[in-house]
Structure formats: C-alpha cells, structure tokens
Length: 577
Image (cartoon, rainbow, N blue to C red):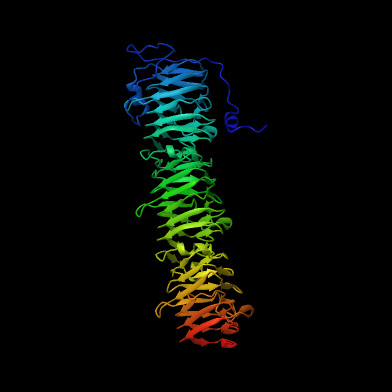
C-alpha cells in the first residue's frame, strides 16, 4: 500500500512511553503541575528576535522541565521545557504556550493531532520553539494535522526545524491554522509548509529568516490569505512562496507580497482570481497557468507596477507553456508582462475552446512560438496599447474575425516576418475594419469575406502559397489607401504566381481598390484581381504586378471600373478580356 506524505515523514518515529510533564510560572518560581487553563488574553502583535539568555532572564523559571509523550488534557506551558522525545497533543486537548522557551532534542517533533495548539506571546516574552543544538534541521518542528481546526500561533518564534523533510511548521491533512506576528527562522526546508486541503484562517505580520529552501510553501487555494505586511524575503536565503498546484475553486485576490510566487507544477483556476499590481508569478519548466471553464482571470497591473508572469529560469524562451484560457468569462490582462512561454507548442497567452480575453497595455515577450495564439471560435474582446515582441514563430496567431480588435497603438518589436500577425482561415461574418498595424498581417490559408470590410490606409497583407482571398455575396472589400499610405496585398514570397489573388464574387459598389499594390497572384489560374461573372470592382491609382496570368481578369458579366493604374511583370497582360 502506498504511504501517504504524513506516513512517510513519520516513518521511524519512536512512540514515547513516557508521560508529559509541565509547569506554570508563579511568583515563587515553583511548578504548579499540569492541568486545565483558559484561553490566554490576546495581546499586541509583535515578533521577537531575543536570544535564549535574554528570554531566560525574563522568565523566573528554574531548570528546564523534560517533556515527551502525549498531552491528553488542556495544558499550559509558560516556563522552560526540553523535549526529550516526541510530544503529541491529542484527545481533544489544547496546549497553551505563553512566553515559554521550548527546546527540542535531535529529530523530535511537536505533533498536534486530535487537539489544538495556541501560542500567545508578547514582544518582551514571545513563546520560542527551538532545538537544543541551535542548527537548522536539528529537530523536525511543529506538525499540525487532521482534526486540528483552531490552532493559532501568535507572536511565536519557531526555528531550527526541517529535519527529515519537515519544516518549522508543517500543516497537513485538512488542518486549519492562524499565524499572527510570528518569526520562522533557520529551517532546513521551509519556514511554513502546508499541504493541499489545508487552510490558513489568518496570516498577518509575520517574517521569515534564513530558511534554507524558501520562506514558505502553500497550496494555491490559500494565496488569498497572504498579507503584504509579512516579510517573505527570508533574509540571506531564497525568499518568496512555493505554491502547490491545487485547483482554485473559490474567488480570491492575490496581492503583491514583495517576493515572487513560484508555481513548480503550474496552477489551474475555476473561480475568479484577481491578481493585483506588482505581483510576480514564476513557473516551473513545462507548466502553465490554466484558466479553466468557470474560471475568471483578472490581472490588474498599472503603468508603474505591472503583473508579471514568467518562467523560473529567466531569459529562456519556451521554458514554460504560458497562460492558457479556456473560460468564456470576461478574462482580462491589463498592464501585465508575460515572458518566455511557448514551450511544447503553447504561447505566452493561448486561447482555445471558446475562450474569451481582453489584453490591454501588456507586454508579450520572448515566446518560443507566439506572443498570443487564439484558436478558431475564440473571442479577443480588445487588444489595445500592447507591446508584442517577435517570438520564434511570429508575434500573434488569431482568428481573422478578431483582426479588427488589434489597435494601431500596439507595437510589434523584432525583425522581418517574426513580427507579423498571422490570421486563420475563417470567414468574416460581420462588418469590420482591418487596421493598419505596425507590422504585416499574414493569411496562412484561403479566407472569405461575407460582410463589409474596410481597410485602413497603410495596412499590409501577405498570403501563403496558393491561397485566395474571396469577397463573397453579401461581402465587400473597400481598400482605399493614400499616396503616402498605400495598402499592400502580396505573396509571402515576392515571386510571380505565389498566391491566387483577390477573387470578387459580390456585386457591391464598395469593392474598391484605390492606392493599392497587388502583387504575385495568378496561382491556379487566378489573377491579382479576378472578377467573377456576378461581381464588380473599381481599381484605380494602384500598382498591379508580377501575376503569373493577368493583372485583372474579368469574366463575362463581371463589371470593372479602372483608371490611372500601373502594370508590370504580368505574364498574360494587363486586363482580360
């Protein structure tokens, strides 16, 4: 039978046959024994770094009392204790620790099972849990496990834990715990390590120092409990928060904690997750941030403090997959930077299966494939003011129906074809305008227009080999440039007959090509402009060149109005018949 995490960690722990001893400090410095106690009065939050000798001076206690075994009734520790073996709080008992110094011998553990641990210290006398040796990993630490729902550490110091894969505080098996004003110091692993299905009921004003793995590790479901007053920098050791991949199913807000959130296995959300400005999210190799059905991602950065999504290993395109959006909710990335995605064919942002997103004032940089890849039948509600850096494949790959959502203020950084926006072979079902972008729009396959389309002056389009742009009945193509900003339709490669050209089927007066350059058509017997017997078009002030057939071909019944055009390199002539 496969052992659970808890069973593996606890394997080999010797069960103590000893009873538990304790004391309560009184004015005569005498032990009053073990017994019941009421919940201590709450005091002001504080974190102490007092030395052991200073704390001992504050406590009018005699020699440390040796403790081990099980605590089965409410007990108070308020003096000095030495854990000579494992201590287990069980049988519904509560262990109150108020100002005590608890020193643990090698490899011991304080385990809160069917019971509760409550610490309540002051700045002058915080409860301290430490090892006898004073070295990281000298003891296992505090374990808070199943059936412990009200444990609370307030103004406590926990240090030197982490032996055998544990942590200063290890929370597991559905336990719930609160932390306020605590210091977690010198663990051989994490200051706090919480497994899946655990809960941080409250987490405030804590600090981490010299924990050798990272500050803490918690499930993604509790990130909303983390506060900005806690110092997650961990001083001389790696700071930040490791995040276990537990699907987020409740609405939550993730704040900028001053250090990064690290997702070694990625994360999936099925609820609303708001990520505040300045938050830094980093991902392990070949992982992704998945916005599943029912999920809603709102990354809310600002011009001075963006939300960042990147791989753990920076400056490595394709290190992680990127952000996947399946949800058809109104997902929004605003002032966000997404870097180094595209691993395994994904993209910095990949929208699929009917997903919906707005991307505004963002930077999509250094993808191994595309900055944005949106499949057919997805919705790009807006794409404004972004900076898209050329990826290994191109800047963007989107449905043709979403081309009008790309605004002219978006910049495309890179060189050559890598900056281009690639569009899929979809029809255009609604009236739309194709913008003049800071790069070329490339048609990867044949496309058709079934609604009125207007093209802004200065727009540039290239077409894949053998492809055709068809203006169908009900559609029109109005491409009116200027002498300074002509509109270009040409093959991906500047070779005669590389693509089919523009086919005009509709009988619409808005089929106008003015100050355009149309080149490289004629593949498959078509022409740069091919007017069917049912179609009509106006071509004026334009250059038509390098067709492998005619520059313009008009079938019987088709209508052409032309004037002031320039023709060159057309194999069969200018206009036929």
